Image (cartoon, rainbow, N blue to C red; front, side, top):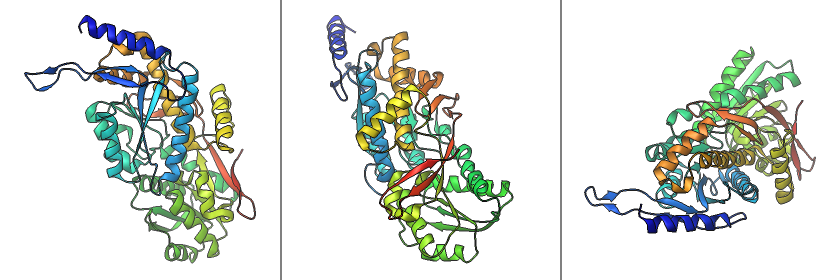
Length: 412
């Protein structure tokens, strides 16, 4: 690098130290000259100004009921960590791209964040189904990816640059079945419903069905549906005729909420367990008063002790006038992992001196080596990027009789 470029980089880095606030600063990528022998850039530039982190989640489609909560959590993290000085004085800047609810949307979002926005890493996507299609793009580009809600089997195994802060469904889901048995030890018959067009739901239902067998219960029927479905009368009637004591649903908030509602309207009075896709307060307006009593396993509790969770909970309640949900907490934690890993890396070798490819590579290594005290509790990662987390919960939905309000009540 010549002296002029070095002086420019130093000046921009100094300016970045003066920036504060949620989205302050601009991001500049200084490109090196083209290598004429290969007709490719000799380097892909050095970052200066606010550090760009990509947020690729569903802001539209039926999946937006989950993605909106992730946007909220990520924005709170940006504001919180920038108020604390960002990355050793340099603010972070979240760059949002909408993945919508399908694989194509996730692929486009990842490609834009990597090639146009030149982010140092990505939080996303919302669905495991999308992750199996989009994460390989980040892997090939050697861009770190942290899945905030991808709990299907084999997500971290996609590649060396793929990790997740969302505990695998195999760890979380069985807790809700055990909670149902605790509430009704006389349970015998179980009906299972799942969205066959969603990779996560297909993965989750396998865990649920195995958990049913492990508990010595009888699986009387397995009913399939699509996440786009709104009419479940046929599947619900088929299940109810078999007189189940427990119904387990793996789907998303919109379809899952409608299924809960129609089961109750058709006369089902037993316990209902919802999977992780129903783990959002956005479910409540869908099934309203009929959501009451649904059990959902949790990887987050607003009551978890710790300074960082207290700050996150306070900020969320002030902004949204309700308790923070799991999807928001996981998005916050994913951004936190990037910030703290960048802080540690910057102390080893100044990140504003690293070319972007090298920064991404070193950051990925640092992410996996670190431990983080997040709203989820203390977490870390295995060498392949699987989250290591010890605290899990089960919540039960409690609704007002008129269906106007409801909340997740955590079971002891």
